[in-house]
Length: 438
Image (cartoon, rainbow, N blue to C red; front, side, top):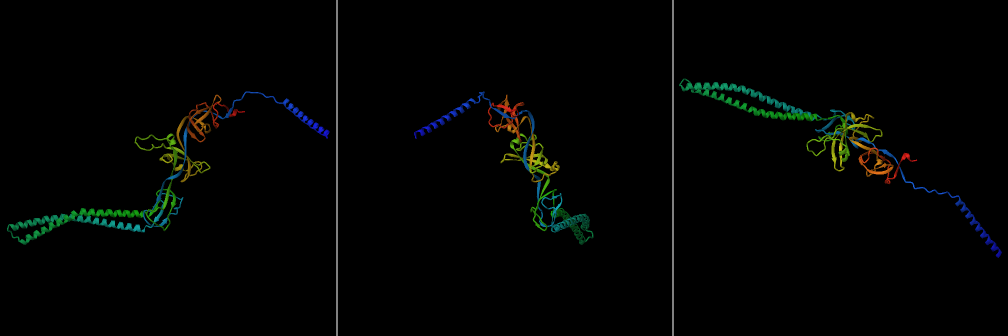
């Protein structure tokens, strides 16, 4: 029993020694075949970027805005007289075009024709009365001349017989009295005729005033008769129509809305900064007014925002409409009219309600550096390469348009500007242009 235990112990010890020996042998082999370590100096970090050489350029600033096209002139037609509709144009449909002076609606004219006939008859009667007064006045003037002559003869005859009677001649009293009566009658006739003639001016004035009133009634009746026909004041498009045949219309009720599509305007907003810096104004007048000087008429370009294909129109900057105190923006009127209402490229017309992008050429920027927007940080700094190392500079951004930024100062011609977007780079880090990186 003891012999077996000794044999097992010696076997275990032998295996352990063999394992340890093999491990030492493997360790020695790994140590003998180890690679040799080379010691080198540390390498400075490098930044791979894109560079652009700065150059001066000039730029005509373009102010971009937008607005909706609207007709400059839109009116609502209403009847000026009441009555039943007896005729209506077949073109009175929303969207239809009509021509100037085209008959749109006719109201029953019989009542107004009757009023006109009555007014004209009254005018004729008063004219006849005035003519009668003139004839009577002329006759009275002629009779007055005869009566004055008769009165003169009667006076001479009376004085003669009276003188004979006083001288004791054979003249009876009855003859003297008869001569006196004849004189009195002649003088009375003269007085009556003069009185009648003196009343003629006032009578003429009274009839003249009646005639003026009658003519006014005739003109009013004629005007009301004309107003039974509602015609288009200009060529345009029916925006809305609310009238049917046989309908009774009240004076003043809106029945048709008409728009003149030959002249459209867009009210477009621009910021106060753009207004002050880039919009050209004419020289202000000497008068003291609290409003802007006239805008210099400037050609502008419009594109239709809803079209996938470029649809372009040409317009003109017309005026400042108002300054909005809520948004602190100025509303400018852009006018498009005539042949310019149709696009040269596509033939598409500019119509009421189209939402358009508007490009307004402003003043010119000179001696600025154009850079990609990625080259300028949000706090107006640029990174440039000076002797192969990054340097930060402050810049003055004169204008941003699209993906470009225009620098007025801080960058000089020939500077190597880093146009790669960087976030908090290390000042003085070595710069390697992207094309030079292996």
